Image (cartoon, rainbow, N blue to C red; front, side, top):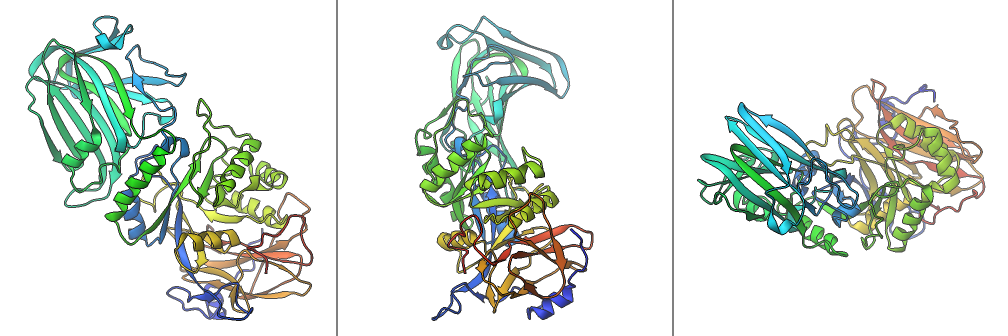
Length: 573
């Protein structure tokens, strides 16, 4: 695509009659001109791909709420992974039978490390002694002397020990063999990232359970680190039960206890010798739809501490090509065993049909994760973009995805392009690898209004860190983003672009709609008002002086006749 000629920042804003600084005023919606008062639309910003503690990352819902407040994002859609919400096929127990221990064919491995200065240390998986209730098998014998700690870090296949702690109880069988006055067995549990609050810095919460003969029961916290002390009797097998959510409540009273995931677990010894056996993970509320109800409760509790941000539960279907689901009844689909992603396009189309039967809209996520751009457009054309309503175009690799988007527009594929952050950690939305937000022209932040705008294609996406302006294509003063006009005469379209960064330029991209090729055929036209001939589409994008695109709109199609695929009712004008 030839980047010349270009619209200047001054030219676009002046011709569009919008202020240089500030938001675009409300505009008439698509009902304008048909009698009666037209609905007034306003720009609404949305983070549409956000993961909390029911996914596998470090994020808490509270951390994301704080990011939305800090960066002025109006709406969050919570897109936790479906099978992780249900904790389907997540790790249930570890029996310490060896450094690798599969469960239902899914791996668990231990890795060892040393902290500080150890004068001696030893670790071995032994047949005896082992915990009597655990039946035949082995146990892990650990010993360490000196000023350091010997650690064993547990790692489950595909992070399937990670799960929200809202309903989680751990048990561990423990036999102290040699125990000095200050020696201890340590169980370290890493939780989720939380924003700064009440003098506590922002960071990942961690609980260290200290089990020793000299320990007095108690809880203490310093910043993001908490310690729970538990006494033990020497020479006897004892079972310890840990309820992390209860300990979070005591260590950090300002934190919603369930707003945490178990994101790391390790066992260590310090100036002591222990045998450990039978580590269990009990998640009491995951059967059937219970996990989704639990998630709703945790989100609601976190939201009470973070008013002012609109939010909705959504879901990412993760065992096909990933599909986000917005709206609908949030019913889990059947899960395959093992829970391994299958990229067969037919399975994804079947999943999309299931989701549509339960209401709402579907979005094809990171569509180039298993395809080149050429492979992607061929699949889009052959499969009607897997039946999805939306596609993540605003993400890396953006140039390739925009290339594919122009092929789709040329072939009259009527999906809505959205932006993605896919944030699993909630640490800083601006520096996350992906940091695009989606805007829509909507009547309100009510879910029904947002879904209607997305369905109609009245959307654009921007780079959260570098551009936050409004984009629009208007006909007769009425927003027509995503619209399809069937008419024989050319249409004059006004281009709107506000809050442009210094030296940024606006590009008006246009191309034929001939449904004839799997390559784009685009030109860049100049002028804040462009004439679109029948048989073409037009969209707008913002390019920085450095050459990077930081915002792009959905197209407006002007067609002389009906295309091969039906025009969705929400787009027809």
